[in-house]
Amino acid sequence: MEIHQTKQGDIIIFQVTGRLDSNSSADFEEAVFGVIRTGTKKVIIDFGELDYISSAGLRIILKATKDLKRKEGHMVLCAMQDYVKEVFEISGFDTFLPIAASVGEGITSFERLVSS
Image (cartoon, rainbow, N blue to C red; front, side, top):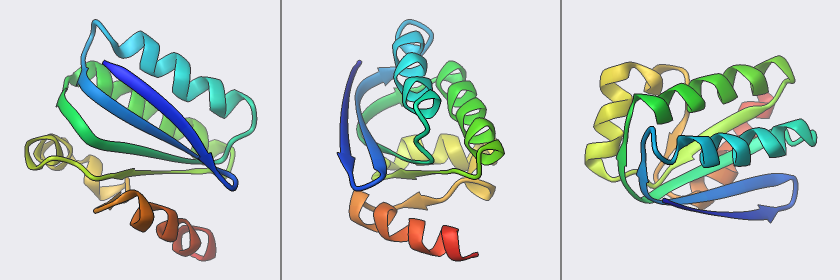
């Protein structure tokens, strides 16, 4: 798995490539919680190049979402392959986490999240 991090304004964008499973989840967790600890309140995770996500990856997403919510922050997931999106739908994560079609839509969705 590869993780690339960029910043656009006050939004941190992670692009995740490969497999997010028990073997790679520690690196992903360190990256995400590293930016949350520094005060970031807006996180986008671009799953456009993600081939697979396990329950270990879902656990990190859930934990980060809860942590951000306590700090009045938000996370948006975007650009999922159909089979990855299905994992989020089956697990019910799509009911409390916004899923955007692209990074651009994810950035735009923060305006709606902050105003609601």
